Amino acid sequence: MSGLFGGESPLEQRYDYLVVGAGFAGSVIAERLASQHGARVLVIDRRNHVGGNAYDEPNEAGILYHKYGPHIFHTNSDQVVDYLSQFTEWRPYEHRVRAIVRDKMVPIPINRTTLNELFDLDLKTDEEAADYLASRAEPVDEIKTSEDVVINAVGQELYELFFRGYTRKQWGLDPSELDKQVTSRIPTRTNTDDRYFGDTFQAMPLEGYTKMFERMLDNPLIDVRTGVDFAELKDRAFEIADHLIYTGPIDEYFDFRFGKLPYRSLKFDHQTLEQEQFQPVAVVNYPDEQVPYTRISEYKHLTGQEAPVTTITYEYPSAEGDPYYPIPRPENQELFKRYEALADSTDGVTFVGRLATYRYYNMDQIVGQALATFRRMDERHTSQSEP
Ligand code: FAD
Image 1: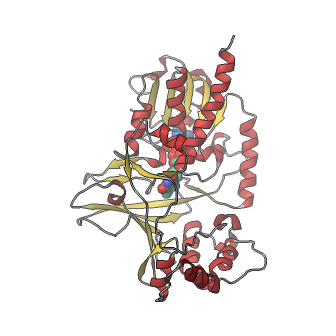
Image 2: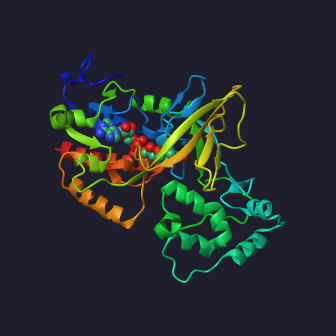
Image 3: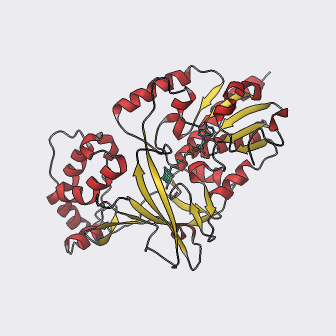
C-alpha cells in the first residue's frame, strides 16, 4: 500500500464511498458498506498503516507492541463482540493496574488491599473499608470541580497521593480547574477485586489488532491507500466518490475556521529490555508529580507472548503532538458545537469516530457508533431501493 498517485492508480474507477481514516470508525463502516451493500469503497489514511490508534506491530526484537500506547479491549455489548469476532479470535485477559505511591506498588482503583498496604491497616470486611473511607472523606458544600469530587469522596490525603499529581501531568491543569464531570465518579472499592474494568467481556484480539483490521478490510470491493492525506484530494473528493465518510478531526475538515479544538497529546518512549519481565502487571501508574511520565506499560502481559526480552512504553503527556484526548472544558464543547452545526448542514459527508465527534471514546463505543451509523445509512439505502 503506498501513495495514491504513485504507480498503480486506484482512481481509474469511481467509488461509491471515500472513507477518510482506517481506524475502527472508518474500517467498520467500509467493511459494512462493501459486504452488505456491495459498495465500492476507497479507504485512505495519512499514517502509513491501518488500525488508527489501535495499531500494533512486532518491533525489531519480535515483540508485538502498541505504537500509540496500550489498548485493552473491554465491552458490555454482545453486538460489538459478535461483530468483531468475525475478524478475530480472542485471548482472555483481565486488566490489572498498580500505582507507585510512597514507594509501594498498590492496586488502583483504590480497594481494600490498597488501604491496608498503604496505611498499615487490617481492614477485613467491606463494611470496615467503607467506614474507613467515610472517615477520610471531607464533605464539600458545593461540588464544582474535579478536586471537590475527589476530596468529598476520599479526603485530602488520598486525593493528593492518587489524583492531584496524575491529573496535573495528564491534563496540564490542576483538578481545581477541571470540570467536575471529568472525575464525576471516583471508582473506589471496599472489596479486594483488583480488576481495572468491570465489563462482561474483557479480551485481546488473539493475533493483535492490526491482523483484525487487515481481515476487516480484506474485501475485493475495498481499496486501501495508506500514506495519503485527505488534504491532497479534498478538492476532488466528489469526483472520486459519491459520498464521503470522514473520521478525521472535524475542525481540520472545516479548515479551522472557528479556531483549533484543543487536545492533550502524549509522547511514547518504547524500550526493549534484555529481561523476561519488567513489572508484575501490564500497566503501572506513577501519580507522583515529580516523575515526568504518567505510566509504564508492558505488552507481554496483554498478548501472552513468550520471549527472553520485553518491550515497555513510558507515556509523557504533552501539549504538542497527535490529538489524543479532547480537553474537557465547557468552552471547548461550545467550540465543537459550532463545528457540529456546520457538519450537520454539509451534504454528502458523514462525520463519525472520535476525532469527528471531539470526544474520548473507547474502542467498543466507536465500533458501536460506526455500526449505528451504518444502520442509518442502510435504512436510507433500503428505502431508496424499494420500488
Ligand atoms: P482513530 O483510531 O484515531 O483513527 C482515525 C484515523 O484517521 C487515524 O488513523 C488518522 O491517521 C486518520 N486521519 C485523520 N485525519 C486524516 C486525514 N486528513 N487524512 C487521512 N487520514 C486521516 N480504547 C479502549 O477501548 N481501550 C483502551 O485501552 C484504550 N487505550 C487508549 C490509549 C490511548 C493512549 C489513547 C489515545 C486512546 C485509547 N483508547 C482506548 C481509545 C481508542 O484509541 C479509540 O477509541 C479508537 O482509536 C477510535 O477509533 P477512530 O477510528 O475513531 O479513531
